[in-house]
Length: 385
Image 1 (cartoon, rainbow, N blue to C red):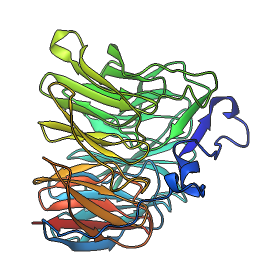
Image 2 (image 1 turned 30 degrees about the vertical axis):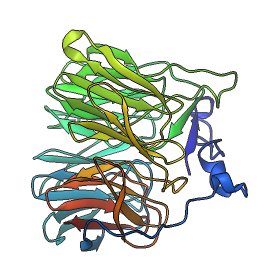
Image 3 (image 1 turned 135 degrees about the horizontal axis):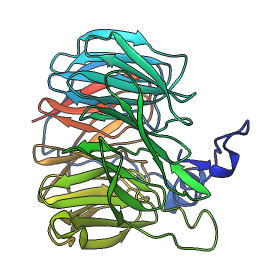
Image 4 (image 1 turned 45 degrees about the vertical axis):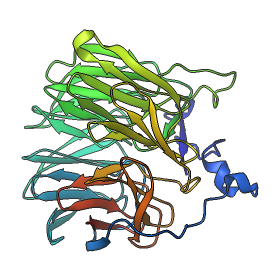
C-alpha cells in the first residue's frame, strides 16, 4: 500500500497517515473488475529462470529498503532492525547486526561504509566488516535509503530536508530544505551520488543536483508540476531512482511525467511524456522502462521518448521497480513472483516465485542475476538464461 505523509502532522503523535489513494491502494480493494489484479497467464517460456539462492535477512519488508551491491558483496536491511552482508555469488551471510529495534530505510553503501536509518531519525554507519563507525541524528524520520559516496552519507528526511554527514565521523556537513507539499507519497525513492554530485528527487516534482562536499545546489529541473484542486490530485513526487547515462539525466513522477534532460545543454528537456508511476524507471542504454500506476509496463526510446511497446498482462499486480538483466526486463509483484519480459517487444518470457509476500523493494540487477527482497524478509537471487 502506498502511504502518504502529511507535513502538517510532523511533531505530533501521528506523523504518518495511511490513506487509500485513487489509482494506487484503492484499486486493489475495489470489487470493480477493472481494478482487479490480472491473473497469471499461460505462455511458452522464452527463458529459463531459477532461484540461485535465498537467505533470510530479517523480518518484513517495506518502502525504503533496497539491497545495495558493492563488488561481490550485497548489503540488505529489514524493518525488524537487521543489517546483513551477503556474498553475491553464493548467498552466504558474512555477518548480521541487530542495529536498532526498528529500521526505516536502508541500505546505502560504497566500498568502505554502509549506512541505514532508524525510525527515530538515527543514522548508523558501519565499515565493510560490520564494525560500528558512528551514529548521527537526522532532523526527522528517514524513509529513503541513505546515499553514500565522495566522503559523505546523505539522507532525506520526512520534513523534506536533505542532510550530509562526514563519512569519517558522522559530523553534519550541510543541510538544505525545500518547501514541500501538504501530502507526499511514501514509496520507493532513491538518491544517487554520481561524480561528486548528489542526485535527489523531491516531492514537489523537481530533480536536484547538489555538490556532495559543499551542499551547494548546482541545478534543479522540473520533472512535473502539480495539477488539480485537492491535495491528493496535486501529489507529483519524483519516485524511484534517477537515471544518469552519458549527457542524459532522467526522472519520473507520480501523476506527472517521465522526462530526460541533457545536462551538457544546461539541463534542458530532450523529451518528456505524461506519465504516472509509483515505482520508477530503469534503462538498458537504448530504452527507458517503467510501470505506470495501473502496472502497464512501457518501453520508451531513450533518445526520443517514443513509446516502443506496452505490456498490459501484469495490470494491477502492484509491480516493483524494474531491473534489466540480459535481454529481459524484470519486475516483481504482490504475490512474490518475478516476471521477465522481452526488452525488445515486451512479450512475457518467464516467471518464478521467490516466496510469500509482496515484492515491494525495486529489483536490483547483478552479473549473477536479479536480486529480489521479498515480503517475508528473504533476499533472493534469481538467475535467467
